[in-house]
Length: 401
Image (tube, rainbow, N blue to C red; front, side, top):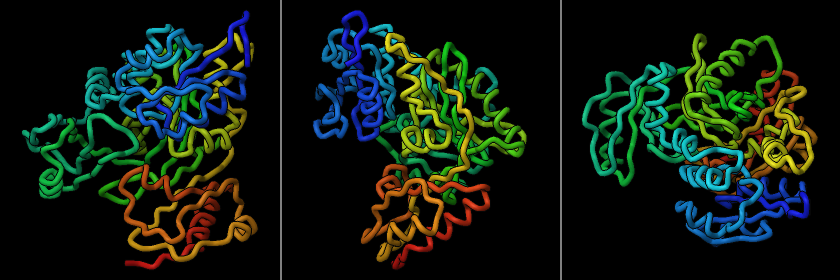
């Protein structure tokens, strides 16, 4: 174990889902002991840690009681609404990372909207429907996005193109046991951003262009790395400028973040931001492969200077990669290609498939999609990646309902 003046370095994981395992492995590789906490005794990350506690992480005081002495770092891991508990723990122990205020500012999507609107970084409408309530006013325009006020992973997000469609959806969804939002739908090309904030300054690691399903669910089923090229220079510049302003409004000082953005050809619209790493095999796999930068590793080196290791969030170069998930729908996968054949026929970087024999419904949320697997391809151009991806997906046989 790493030591600093006789001190055994210790990291905490607040929320030990399967997506925390990468951070735990990074810490172990750096010689840091890991304490994992989660309310679910079956959480995958608990078994990977050196020490584990089953506690209700929605109550940060319970997390602090279980930790006792201060850890050296709270490892950044994908987590939803209760990123706020990580913020409270960081504040309590005076650790670098997201603060309680910063976490609240991004996990509460209504507050997020209000903060950006007040600084003229948004001019769209957003209507709050309180828990147990009904929509009190007709939106001024359509389409609209209906989504929970809190949460992640595109949970329960639906786009309604007309007033009658919205009425039908709300008739099924309301009254809800949580606050809901009805907000203006922004059109454009969708992007994801992986970045760090150091001393209040944004350091972009990777911009990813999304492949999106049609309305009404608009789920991301793949991402292209936005490599170094003049074609994307303006998009990168506008994304960086807008996100630096958003970082300042949200009060982020030192943390990892991921953001969802829309580019309409003239302006950048920030859909959502969260002060933690991206999920869906992005921060732990795709982003390091595309950039050579492992965000969690670099943040840990930054946050624990006693390791004596330099850190950098700046890629030397960006590879042209595509990560694609299996978005088959309305049928059962009865045949899949042999892995050896896939490796021979395609510029394959990574491949994981769990589709054979499974019935596939339309993709309506992230977690369902992730259960199916993914593949990562490398290509010299976007056109090549599109072509190779389409050819690979055609190797699967789906019997339609």
